[in-house]
Length: 476
Image 1 (cartoon, one colour):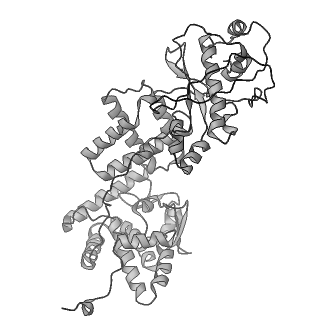
Image 2: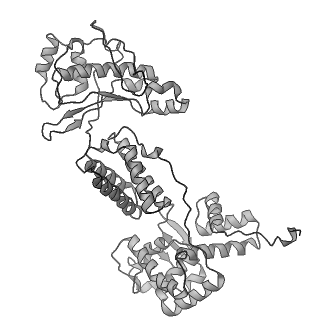
Image 3: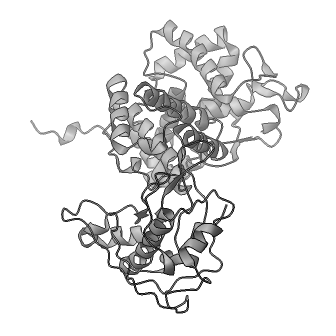
């Protein structure tokens, strides 16, 4: 496949009008995701952000094998070395105009040899020429950022440096206009490499639901990804909102924005429009803390009816681990002699925590167990359990539901409630002997929060800090 960029510079000085082919679409200029016709209305930051992105000429040509218009190499020249909108447009409008001429002449990016087209255009030895200066023009309504170029008929032999364009060493990244199926596969494959085993299934599920909705509305896997517009995504998010909740709608928006960012980063689409879609106000959902008497009764019940679940909950309560972190524990992660445990946490690859004496006394003899076995399985402590972390967490969540049903607890209570309950309890005990700052500093070491701000937000969310009785302040 011959480089379109190299071909442009070789024949620019001899282009003529030829009959229009229907095997390509009109070349266009991508200007950083903004309308250059409204450049003066943009803020300095918006202009700066636009100039941080690559500007280029793009077009599609019909693939002889598939018969579909397929995105070709982005043509940039030296445009992105320029620091101003005017200079970038000067280069790109020249490239666009010349590209239109060579396409009209019959240039085929899929052909092995375009020499006949070159001979027809040149009728002489190739030479480097200076392209005429072109001013960017827009329609009277200022609604289109596409450039309408005018090329001078005067052809002058000059050095390539004077035209501020480099012929040698140009390397462009080939890019096809992907189908919906190809684009979603690229996004999913990329995110699978960077998301953890817990997050990726949720991400994949949301993207597949979006894909199914598109198919139900006439956009199939074979359709161009460019058919998926901001308006279509908004319609989908509105559908999610009507069927579920603002929270689910916002979560779907986050994952779609993440997907479309991958497509923008790989130059499959011109820009990620999803991140410009507004976020709805959604009431956060959290588990309630248990009342002291409820907590006492639940522990007594578990000791008698379900010792495995009882120990599981003690890791949540005494070590302040998240349920999924408890599911990750293997026998070798617990160093009983040194009173330490090591677990993969939410905010770091490995988190080291002490094992309090209150929990140590409840542990079975781990020396007789396989070090590589999981600490918790459905029927025993220390054993094999071949399933995902998410499935394990869901299993213990459902197992605890039987306990909730026994005590008549609703959906506001769960395994996470024990973490909230014991952090609240610990905070209030420490507060009796230390200042607020000292209390939070000690608590931060115990809970594993990475910053004081994160801990303070957590304490506010669970209503851990309450004022003293203020009856004496009320004057009636």
